[in-house]
Length: 93
Image 1 (spheres, rainbow, N blue to C red):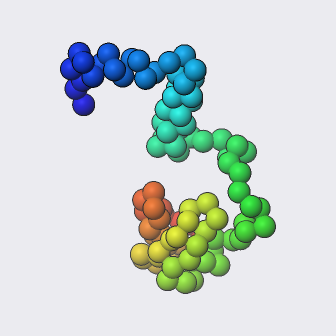
Image 2: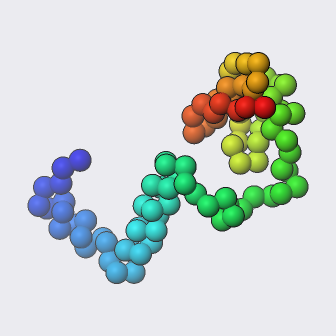
């Protein structure tokens, strides 16, 4: 995306010191999310919904507290390939 000088000046007026730290933290979060290097201790979810994923793999589709709605695409000898909103995941069981 290429900005001309008029857009660049208006963009700089939007990025102030007060929201610069927020934008840097958010961009760091998105980078870590894409690379899969988020700290599991910092992810908050209801632990009472934490069930074994192997139980869900027997169904065609299921809802997971972290992954959301999941669809089992293919079952293999030692696991399954699951389609989630972030992409396909190979689950070994």
